[in-house]
Length: 162
Figure 1 (cartoon, rainbow, N blue to C red):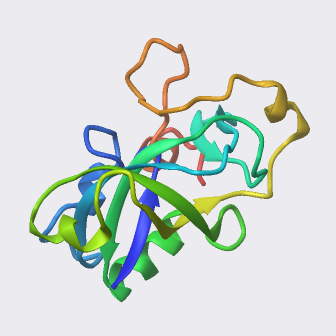
Figure 2 (figure 1 turned 120 degrees about the horizontal axis):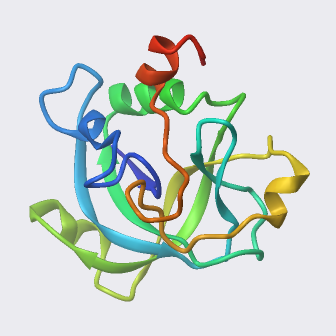
């Protein structure tokens, strides 16, 4: 099992969270708790699809909030494909401060305030203009930021493709 830190559309209450739920053909993901990055990163909403992107520029931006999941190899393979790894996003290790944990498996990642390491999906493939955008501490597709997320399904049905 591998720990993954998600900060965007895969979080609870977000458009792609259903992909992390049990009984999916993509593998197993167990929610472990909430955390934030130790290092600051630019988290932007970018591109024509308004996708949240964690730019691989440690030391810039905000301490990003997200969720930690324990995933099996099947889910890890699915997430790599879903995130366009290694072309669009790269799976990188980040240091996290545990903010809260939940469920039986949560105790295995440590106490609130403890430091842990997990993989996340960040990108080195971004336009320079993205560094001039607003950096977010936390992503919510439904906030009033006027940047409507366009899902992969909607991109395909509208002829945008991926």
